[in-house]
Length: 496
Image 1: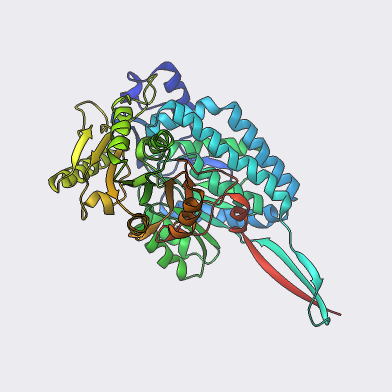
Image 2 (image 1 turned 120 degrees about the vertical axis):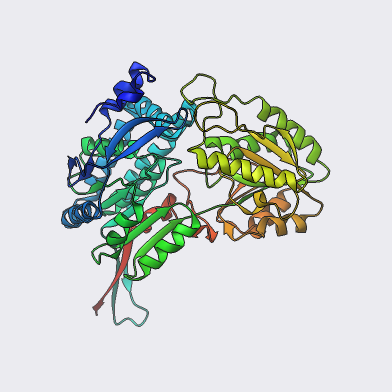
């Protein structure tokens, strides 16, 4: 493990520098840390734009060696008793609780989210370790006579085999645990390629898994700044049996095309364009609270973030006024500072995207109630923003915002609200606020999404199936359904 980048040391506290010095800087292959090539990945703190650590950069050859290690470990790990796998995952959960302050600070340093939210991610991410430690011992099948009475049917579940995971930058811990935990519980080995922008948390987590007793080769990590070059040979290798990706829909489509060549099992958690519908009978206090959660959690950089606020015309002014007042009170700054509620965006391109989306909406007739600019300071910041009177055709209604901008349009009838909610290629999550129970049930049936928050702005839970419909993806992560993504069904007939 190397020291932190010397150019950033003067800007870091002693606690931050000490933590970064303990984060591995190599590739994790076959249970060992390797230096990799001389070329390195430079990890930035988005609150300052400064490099805080340099780490190894995997080559395509490194990726295949990681797959070699996963393949070599597969048979023994699949044969490991479920109780043993469960106890290792539970040990990982316990270690994460012991080290939660380290993980929270590390996520804030490399991704930017406020420390309070980073602590929340430790809790959320840890729950996948605990949940799937419990599911590991509940993998079951069926046994019974066939209808004709000519034999006995045995249906069993087996691990699919070596898996390749491509994780995003916005939830560095939770996206790793949400994929790794069910795979290990099912008896699969894995190769993980974390996002180039936030690889440190995954490296730190790989060391935690080793400390928890995960055998060598069961989990391998290959971070790289040439994602396509490293991923393509792994996906093309016939020994790989499962691909799971979280990220944009265009990249997901390309990966699906590659996976099709070997008929790989796939899980795809892709883009979102979440509607947030507020009916005239909504409890506005709950709706405003839900809006703040659904829009500004993780600085708006979440696929579950509310994207299009569709508010009944009779309550739109009041809802907008209340939301704008709360948004104006949010404090912008580095996530490590006490009291900060909105940290930086991930990079300068994200800031430019916010400026372009807001600028386009304003040119088409929208009004800015609060925010709307990028402050002049170090790092990649954009003010939390509320815009109203957003006109049809505005880019902000079509594109996934992925930032702290709340855009409001109005509607007059229920049918209009549903039509507006569904007029997108995406279908990950939707939010509906109404006090009418019958209307709420209709929205569950009519809004075309894989998940819904009814009178709440937060839906994610390790015990629930996470995933979307349409071009928001395939498969589910979490819940009872999550482990089945890593199991194949085998039927055997025993003649009478």
